[in-house]
Image (tube, rainbow, N blue to C red; front, side, top):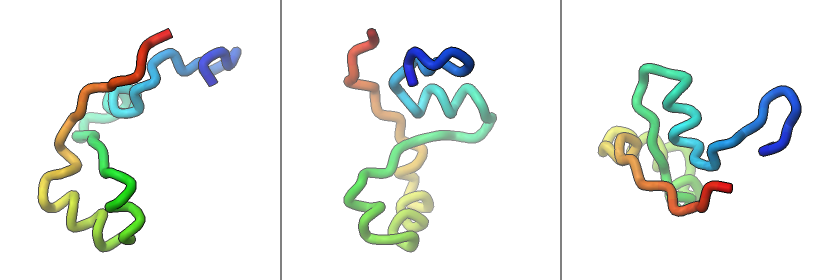
Length: 61
Protein backbone atom coordinates (compact mmCIF):
# COMPACT_ATOMS: atom_id res chain seq x y z
CA UNK A 1 0.00 0.00 0.00
CA UNK A 2 2.99 2.27 0.37
CA UNK A 3 3.13 2.89 -3.39
CA UNK A 4 -0.62 2.92 -4.09
CA UNK A 5 -1.25 5.57 -6.80
CA UNK A 6 -4.37 7.09 -5.18
CA UNK A 7 -3.91 6.57 -1.47
CA UNK A 8 -0.28 5.83 -0.61
CA UNK A 9 0.36 4.85 3.00
CA UNK A 10 3.65 6.50 3.79
CA UNK A 11 3.46 6.11 7.59
CA UNK A 12 3.58 2.50 8.89
CA UNK A 13 2.18 3.54 12.29
CA UNK A 14 -1.59 2.98 12.17
CA UNK A 15 -2.11 4.88 15.42
CA UNK A 16 -0.74 8.05 13.82
CA UNK A 17 -2.66 7.47 10.58
CA UNK A 18 -5.97 6.97 12.40
CA UNK A 19 -5.31 9.76 14.92
CA UNK A 20 -5.00 12.23 12.04
CA UNK A 21 -8.53 11.30 10.93
CA UNK A 22 -10.39 11.77 14.21
CA UNK A 23 -10.65 13.89 17.33
CA UNK A 24 -11.01 10.76 19.46
CA UNK A 25 -8.13 9.02 21.17
CA UNK A 26 -6.56 6.17 19.26
CA UNK A 27 -4.49 3.41 20.79
CA UNK A 28 -3.51 -0.23 20.63
CA UNK A 29 -4.90 -3.46 22.00
CA UNK A 30 -2.50 -6.39 21.95
CA UNK A 31 -3.43 -9.51 19.97
CA UNK A 32 -3.67 -11.66 23.11
CA UNK A 33 -6.53 -9.43 24.30
CA UNK A 34 -8.24 -9.60 20.90
CA UNK A 35 -8.04 -13.41 20.93
CA UNK A 36 -9.94 -13.40 24.23
CA UNK A 37 -12.95 -11.86 22.48
CA UNK A 38 -15.04 -8.71 22.30
CA UNK A 39 -15.64 -8.60 26.05
CA UNK A 40 -11.89 -8.51 26.72
CA UNK A 41 -11.38 -5.68 24.21
CA UNK A 42 -14.24 -3.75 25.79
CA UNK A 43 -12.80 -4.30 29.27
CA UNK A 44 -9.37 -3.18 28.05
CA UNK A 45 -10.83 0.05 26.72
CA UNK A 46 -12.55 0.74 30.02
CA UNK A 47 -9.28 0.06 31.84
CA UNK A 48 -7.60 2.74 29.77
CA UNK A 49 -5.47 0.47 27.63
CA UNK A 50 -6.83 2.04 24.46
CA UNK A 51 -5.49 5.43 25.46
CA UNK A 52 -1.90 4.21 25.77
CA UNK A 53 0.18 5.26 22.80
CA UNK A 54 3.20 3.11 22.16
CA UNK A 55 6.02 4.41 19.98
CA UNK A 56 6.34 2.87 16.57
CA UNK A 57 9.36 0.58 16.36
CA UNK A 58 9.11 0.07 12.59
CA UNK A 59 11.62 1.88 10.46
CA UNK A 60 10.30 4.47 8.05
CA UNK A 61 11.25 3.82 4.44
